[in-house]
Every structure is written in C-alpha cells, then in structure tokens.
Amino acid sequence: MGESAARTSGAAIVVSGAALSAFHLRSAVQLWGTPALVLLEAFVPLLLSLSITGAGTLVWRGEVVPERFADRTVAWAVVGAATLGGVVGWLFLDVAIRGRPVPAATRTFLNAATLGTLGGLVVGGYDARMRQQRLRTAQLTRINETLRIATREIVDAADREELETMVCERLTRSDSYDSAWIGRYTPGTTEVRPVAWAGHDEAYLDSVEISVDPSDPSGRGPGGEAIRTREIQPVQDVFAEPSLEPWWDFLERRGVESMAVVPLVGEERVYGFLSVYANRSNVFDAPEREALSELGESVGHALDSMTARDRLARRERELSRQNERLDEFASVVSHDLRNPLNVVQGNLELALETGDREYLERMAGALDRMDELIEDVLALARNGQAVSEFRPVDLRAVAEVAWETTTTGDATLVLEDGLGTVQGDEGRLVRVFENLFRNAVEHASTGPPQEPGDVAEGDPASGRSDDGSAPEVTAGDDFTRGSSGDDEGEGLTVSVGRTDDGFYVADDGPGIPEGKRGQVFETGFSTDPGGTGFGLNIVRSIAEAHDWEVVATESDDGGARFEFTGIAAAENERAEPPQSDEE
Figure 1 (cartoon, helix red, strand yellow):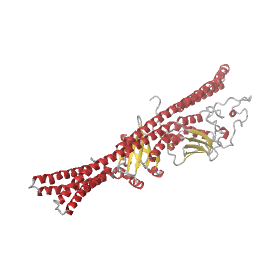
Figure 2: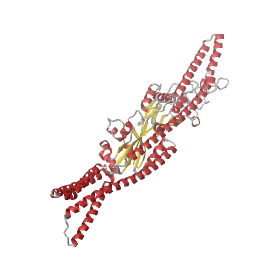
Figure 3: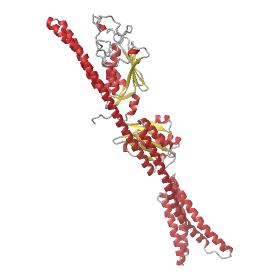
Figure 4: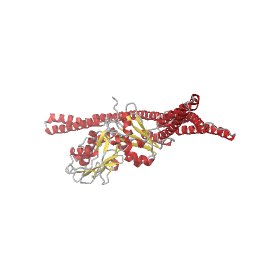
C-alpha cells in the first residue's frame, strides 16, 4: 500500500510540475522582448516548477519522504498552492473592486501557485519525516517491550514446548502481528513440522508441508530459505511473492498481506523457524526485521541451553542406571555365577573320586549355564547404554526381522496397521522384539496357569531338592506360566500395535498374575530354572536407554501385554540426535 501511494502521489506532483513548467516556458516566449520580465515572471517560476517535477520524481521513487506518508506531502503541496493562490486572488479582487486593471492576472496567479506548491512540498516533506520519526520511536518502544517480555518468558520456560507456545502467544498479543507459528527442523531431514501456534487454525497447520529442499515446490518459499540461509526472510506483499503461490488461498482467507520467517539459530544449528503474519503490507521494515532476528537468536540460544540441560540430565540418568547395573553385575558374579561354579567344583571332586561320567555331564551343564549368564550380562551392559544416535525406525520392519530370527514354533504374528516409525536405535529395538517374542512363545501353555511353587517337591521343574530346601531364584527370562516345552507357540497369537504415545507387544497366552507384573523386569527374577533371568531386564534397559518406559499388563485376550510409553514425547524433544559426552 505504501509503495502504491508513493507512486500515485509522485506521479501527481510530476504532472503538476510539468504542466506549470510548460506554462512558464510559454510565458518566457511571450515576454522574450523584455528581459527583466522574462527573468522575474518566467525564468524563476520555470526553475521552481522544474524543482516541483524533480521532487515528484523523488517522491515516486520513495527517496524524499517515507512512502506511507507520500499522500500527506501532496496534501501539503495543494495547501501551499491554494494558500498563495488565494492570497493573490484576494489582492486581485481588491484591485478589481477599486476599478483598476489587473496586469497578467493568470500568469501572476500561477506564479504564486508554483511558489506555494514548492513551499507546500518542503513543509510536507518535513511533516512526513517527523511523523515517520514519531512512529519509528513508538515502533521501537513497542518492539523493545515485546522483546523484553518475550525474553523474560523464554528464560522462565521450563521446556521446549512451553517456550515455543509462549513466543507465539506473546507475538500474537502485540498490536503488530495477527498470528504466528513455529516449525521444528531436524538436521539431516528435509521436512519442517509445525509444533506451536497462536492465531492459527490447527487444521491448517496439520496440512502445512514445508520442505528445505530447493528442488521441492514446498521448499522454495521463505520457510525453506530461512533454514538454508539462517537469515530472516521478510515478505512485504505475500501476493507479489511467486514462491508463496501454494499458500495464496489460505493467506487470502486469513487476510494476510505480509509475513516474516525468522530462523531459530543456535550456536551450531538451526532448530526451525518462527513464521509471523500481519494483515498489512510493508510491516517488516529494517527495525522490525532486526528485532525479530534478535528474538530468533534468543530462542535459539535458549534451546541450546535446554539441549545442554537435557543432555546433562540424560547423562545423570545414564550414570544412575550404570550404577544400578554394576550392582546387578556384582550380584550375578557373587551369586548367580558362584552357584554353577560350586556345582562344577563339587562334581569335579566326585568325578575324580569315582570316575562316573554323570558328574562330568553335570559339570558341562553348569558351565553352559555360566556361559549363558555371561552372554546375558554382556548384552545387558551393551544394550543398557544410553542411545547416542537416534534415527527413524520402522516398527513393522524391525518386528518382522525379530520374528524371523526367533524360534516361534506354531505361533502367529499379527502386525496392526499404522505402526509407523519411532526415533531410536534399530538394532536394540530388534533385540526388544526378539526377547518379547521369545518370552511369549516359551511361556505359552495349553494347560492352566501355575503360580510358582504349584509343582510337587522333588520334581526337577520345581527348583527344590528332595530334602525340601529351595535354592534362590537365579534364572529365567521372565515369569514362567507352566510351559510344557513340547507345544511351544501352539495356537499362540502375538500382536504388535501402536498407542498414542508408544507401542505394545501382546499375546493371548496365560498372562502374568497382577501381583508379579512389577517383578518380571528385575534381574534374575524367574520361576524357570532353565533361563538366565535377564530377558525382560534387557528389554527394560533398552527402553530406559531410549528414555522410554515399559510396563507389563494384561492383554485384551487375557495374555501378557508390554506397553512402551513416552515415545512420542521423546520424538518431539529431540530435534537432533543427542551428542555423546565425548564429542
């Protein structure tokens, strides 16, 4: 609007100046025989009218007065011309009333109008500049106030979601902007995902597709450019910007005429951008752009701090988990490994005394058990370390791989639609599914559920010796439900599905008693003397390494169900893969 007004006003001034110049040039020709009159009544007015034409050209180009106030300059020129013309006309009227002749009335009147027009342009230019200065002062005050409040809210924000929402709401509450939204960007990807907004319809943002790929039409707009260049992208007239054509319909419905896309730049990366809309054109001038750029940098540095804080908290949790694992490993070494070692030592003495091969077979079994324990301890150590590099993982693909690498007998795998992807470590997620599938298949039974201790004393499966003494529980991949071993997986269905904030693995087997569900993840908890007691503990460790939670509950069919939660939140929090502490 300002540019259009400047061009219209400048053109009007140029036309007026040209018309006056033509008249004064004609007067010079008529008065050529009288040099004094040529100079006084033609040449000087001609110079003034040519000055008016030049001033109009400058106004048209926006170089003399602020474009938004060009029409006021024209108004002042009209007032000046009318004022001096009126004075001269009043004098001519006085002379006429006295009955005296009026010499060269038209020429004199237009000479006065020329002088008045030029004087009005001078006054109008001064007035426009003063108004611009006052508006600029008010604008800077408003910008500084908005920045001050926004910066304070940034400092007070507890997490990234709160920070992003507060920034959008603060900008929208100001008088200058009508709406704002923030899109997150993950380095190495091509898409920008809307996460916070104010003044926008959620349905619109759900449909927004912004890319950073310049070969993609949705990546050629100011959003993709802001990410690539790390510089603010102002658009003073959205309908004059060809790259915004895919969004013109929406912008027109919302009454948007100008916008600015501000990159959220941290110390080493871009976290996304802030898109600000206004219902007037030419809003984002130099001071506005500078202020918004500073706001984008403030948000970027705040996100740097949050990332560092989250990384520190994650490291502290990892150290805590490592300490817990060290205690568990110490328990395994001091107790679980000592038991089979005692078996080896005892049977070795008997073998040496009697030469009976049965004692050697017992020794071999004990050594095999020690090997299993060592392998599972190593697996727990490796898989329990915090995930340092997150990548999109296809849940369906890893579930299918795990099913192929697990002995599943006659069991059936059902993968629900819409599993999608999660951010994580693919290899460890395969291990999660392998352990859960093995857990479901190995402990499914066609017989009734058994509580620990339901089998008879003296039975090898009871874990009790003939004298009734009970060894401490040291083995088992999970809670055992009376598996017969001959019909593993027979008729069993294992399903994998997605939840609002994670996924689950469920079966239609006998399930887990409610009172035991919290214990199945503990190291060594089992009622199966043939296992090692680390299977579900490894599952929990992998979940914790991703900052997820896993719980055991009952499936819809009465079987076991393992739910992983906190995955959606973890996916949103990490705009980039966490850095390792060695980097």
